[in-house]
Image (tube, rainbow, N blue to C red; front, side):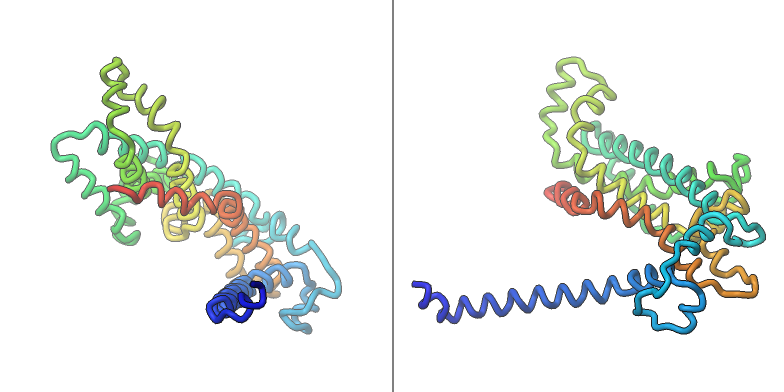
Length: 294
């Protein structure tokens, strides 16, 4: 039987395609990760070694000084205090933005599927339309709103901007997810006397972990990586990490320190990379969980 199976053309064909697929995936993964590998190598080399050596060679003298300088003493614009302050600015911006937009999106999706009202489809269509509005169109009206509220150029202003722009996406995710949730459970809770928020907190929200993960990853990535809003609505010490990284790379102090620039870029990308490593596999699961109906 084993000899027959080894001579079976279909088995040989399956092995060939399996090897081909895995080989292609490995080659593509190496090609995709090559820039990150070069960045890591460059960030632990001295400047002399960077100028004289090959990008792909391992460092002769390993050093963490570029990382220390990027974090604490590198010149960002006119100040030379590193990127640590701007890193925490992004943390203070992204955490409330993601939390608020996720909660509001969950409540909106709950209302649009389980507490429908006349015209709810039009409301959802308008919110969905907001997802496709280019960033550049809202710059002027948003700046006027922030100026009127007195929070222009601040972290609070950026939080408001990202929450406003993210509600459309978070509502879309939760609305599609709750569309497949059994309405009978909600109706039974209403008959038992449960109110609006009790049903939401006790029935829908505990079963919403997959779509919460999707929304958090989506919002966190978009908000952390945003440059346009950060450059437009924050300045100076309130600037987020992306703006600080741009200023660091473009600051001229006589010597171009590629190792410091690479270390700062890796630090800036680390949070989103960590989020995808920890929770990335749940992202597709959450999307598929809300794709049955809606």
